[in-house]
Image: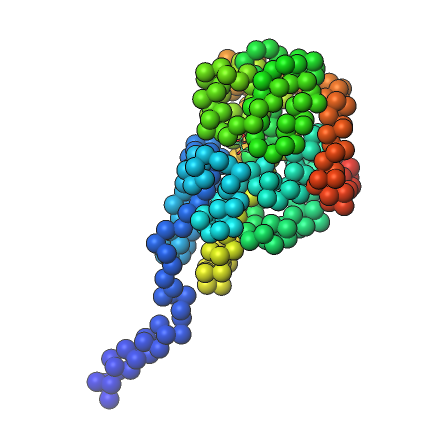
Length: 340
Ligand code: X2X
């Protein structure tokens, strides 16, 4: 009787392996994750967490390599979405600005002075506009897994303090490759130039451009922009979400169980990253104090001062309602006015 036990167990195990394909799932040895920034700061650190957790939770089945500093899109940040769509990038921690040439509705977040607070932003992402944007992205071959954040974009320059629109007159400001930024800075009297981030950093150092706009905690601080930019104005004129996204081709190659792990991990990491991106900015002045400690002069605009900038950029806002889609803007405006 006893001598039958071992073979019976062996057969049972064989059957178990046969009926549990998730355990035996073989994927490509490396999944590529694209980022415009480097590994330092909340944005890059979140990508490292994502890769580490997924590897652990899938016992190494999903092995992500982070391609920092635009390595996958060869410096051209507005190509990131296309790479995802083609499956050249499997994942991306992508700024909505960089994806907006392909998904123009994402310009919603760049409409000048649209979002007064994090609360308003969160409500828009969680509400109908957020769902609509997710559908639009998915229809273009990318699955958005979670909203993370770059942040409110503040303007810096090497020349002078900016307190009113006239202070921007003639300043050469590097902006990202969505035309809404050219429109906005032109309306304010500046001289905007479109440049990829890698190239822009060299331009700040050599002084061929005077200024730029980016969030304090995720970009200005980790990239130590105080080495070239003396002045910063806190005006929160645009918000830049980061979407943790996966190529539909990659998503379809995963087992249902692994998809669940990927989704859960993205949601967790995004929540951590959002909190980290806001640390020192929300209910604290630590983020600004740190800039001052590093020699920056910081102007924090009052609501009355912001009204002057808003006024000047109103025609840009009105023009972009048409580009983004009147219904989408309206539903976001309604949520914003309720959650100020
Ligand atoms: O290029 C920028 O300014 C950055 C890093 O914020 C984006 O990727 C949009």
